[in-house]
Image (cartoon, rainbow, N blue to C red; front, side, top):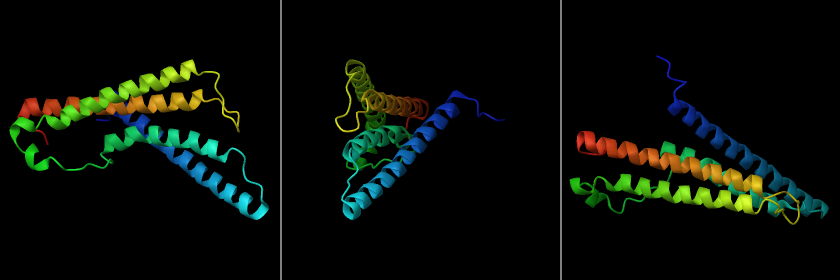
Length: 167
């Protein structure tokens, strides 16, 4: 049975598309850096606004790729508590951490979106680009990561309640 139309698969496709967008932005940023270095050192004509474009791009790269990284388990995990987490009484801790991360990133998304609305007319000094599209992109990425975290917390608690342990 083809379940490609399910909401879960649509969400996963959206996360993959966001990560692809972040990768394309990174590729463009790399090209911009090469052009800036060539112009600066060989022609003494630096690309005006390259620092500002880099700042905009980095915000989008981080927030657009964060949800895909979290959904695929691509993040770095430090196993400081592993020897204590084997006890049945502490198996709920990873789900609690996912819940806390989800709540934190909902707050981050809300605040960044509010900043985009309140700072609607802000523009950059060199490129004169408006700030709001980049802030909306960051807020959207933070919201998607929050949904990933909350989904991981929910599935972890379902595993604990159904089997008594978390895998």
